[in-house]
Amino acid sequence: MKQSAFLLLLLYTLPLLGSVPSYELTKDFWNNPHFVKSFMGDYGFRSEVEPRISKSEQFVLREVRAKAENQLKEAIDYLFEKISSKSSAALDFALGSMCYQSGRMTQAEKSYTTAIDKFPSFLRAHKNLGFVKLSLGKYKDAASSFSKSISLGEGDGVTYVALGYCYYMGQQFISAENAYSMGVLLLPESKDARNGLVNCLIETNRFAEALALLNELLIKEPENSFGHRARVAALQGLGLEMEATVALETLKRLGNLSKEDVIRLGDLYHNLGLYELSLQNYERAIEGDEKLSISRYIRVASILISRGSFQDCFAYLEKIEKNFGPQYLKDDEKQVLLLKSEVLLATGRTDESTTILRSLVEKHPLEGKALIILAQIAWNKKDFATASLYFERSSKIAKWEVESLVQHGRMLVDTRNYEKAVRLLERAESIEPQPRVNRFLESIRNLLLTSRVRL
Image (tube, rainbow, N blue to C red; front, side, top):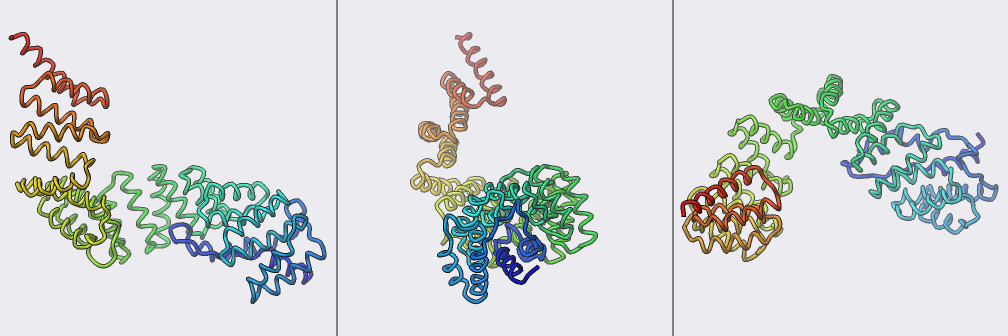
């Protein structure tokens, strides 16, 4: 290849070495030689997928190449002035590549799109546009661009891996699996391809297949953190919680347990009925400077309540308040106070619970759960009028309407107001039929019928 043509090709295929967050595609993907080669490789000139370049345009591109080595911005500005509606799509392609390299993603997208408008079968423009759109989070559009480049003859592994990721982000797991499988075939050492394939198998509940693939991986790479973590998910999917716990403990011994993993380990021990070990992990998860979102810890507190560990839950809620109190969002504070009121109520501190709940409904008038608990407290105190008021208020909130009607109906049965109880229960059943409520309703109807016969 002549030197001028080689320089032209180098510029024409500037690598897209952008950086994206690790939760998208790993740095290994973007910096992998295979990725660079997909832009810098031996493409040659194929008339069916490459636009023609005039001699004057070759001169422009050589000038741009020389400037781009040390003055990328000046090279972009120079090339921008040389582009017109009649110039070759190659100039737009080169501009798009340099704009991407300088972080000007919107202009890069526009330049690649213009190149395709001028030359619709421009394979590398379609592919590079796909990477630009992927970087911008436009996964559906990126998938279309990658698919088009493949239909034009592109067959490199990085394109299939990127396509698989776009499908995965769009929750098209079967399509993603097919693309990742091609990526594994073409790039057997690619972590992104292999890990993406495993994720697709897990997402489609094919846990046995995922487990077989992961067991094979861990024989080769026994300290692979992703492999152990994904193996936990596969084992859980198969209902093998003891084995999943062992797998997570293995990751712990490797020193690669994240805070999310610690909570998961707590959940596993909870499911196994090993509550002391469960609590130890839950408490470890909230210690230290690194923190998850508060919702993760609120969920833990809810688990502690559900298993009747009220004192442990109260202590955990105090730790949440200590760690997050100054940064509470309104909804976070509401959830913590609701849980605290439930613990206080369960441990006989009814007055303290009532105070918290009343304060809550003053700040959040539509907090149906707090209204229902207040109604139940009043019911237990035989203050049926107050309880009815709270039940009526909560029944006007769509999310809590059925629960309010059922609980109100139960209270009315307790006070022998069967006719009104039947009306409320019938209303609840018309909104959301429930076998348990239906059986209760039938028994009240029979009771009402019997009482009328006696009269």
